[in-house]
Length: 417
Image 1 (tube, rainbow, N blue to C red):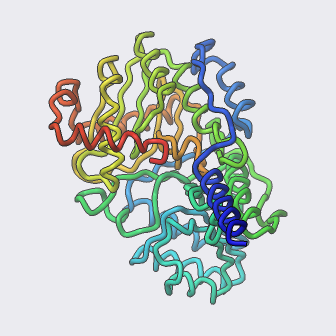
Image 2: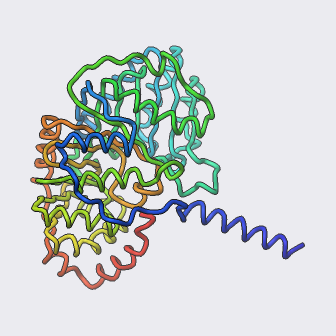
Image 3: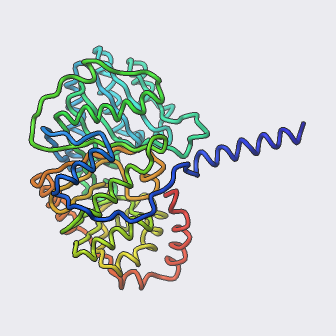
């Protein structure tokens, strides 16, 4: 009996390990050949059909910089809700901002608005806290993503989605925490961008939320309260794509690979966690060889994961030797996730440039095809570059022996970072 029990226990542990750390899907290994440019209509068709849902016209997207703009806009939108609110986030940390959102959501629930909140169980530091209890008491339907699933403990939702009445959406990189408050004017306040979205693409944002709501609550939300008729309100062509290890874990990675492979002039990447795999690294180097200018903006010394920074810097050598320019943001933690290509294509949202976003977490990014919008994003990127320091090949070579040893060790963990 003991042998049977031990065998059963080992089998269970093995199952948990495989479900958490070994993907059953094959990984794209071959180079993406450049067959068209970003401005070619074929690029838009490829992104629509390979990633899905399709790119739709008639949208308006407004960038919001840092907590000083982001939180008032999101809270004001919540206050206008008349029929429904759907809200999904990874970070929900106890503090003033978390309390303000809890109060705002609870108030709408008491008014009879249907409020649905999905928070990642690992990203929330107040699972049993008063803020969450206050929402539930008010009638908010609240779920914690993979709270008790041992087999899925390494699989998190990293999506950031807020949809009001099915008509107005918010997405980006912001977490619901005091760290994002203020104007990124000190080490304690993160630099980040969130986007207010209107138009037909909001329905895709709602569908992205419902993807995980159905997995947790097992309830389908539909009808006019969630999917009203949406008129065209702007000129932007947009797509809200989502990725998940349970239904196409390569989507985020494929989006980046296809975009980089189509570049003809410039690639600008801003990301909090930058750990490209070998194929993605080679795709960036291929772009440089075609004459594309590649600039990457990352956090500097102020970062919430020293391990990620050590692993990233360890692997910069090949990129720097190949002509990729790397910059480190100096004033505070840089938490943006953005990519602009050829002044025409922009991707923003929750996905980081690492294996965790590419193959482990649930992610959602807003893609925009428009030269004017991309031009504005490039100008914001340029302003952030002015507050950064370039990390050169000489800097990489002159790292201390201690950093090189720690970096080599950290790089071994990159599949989980």
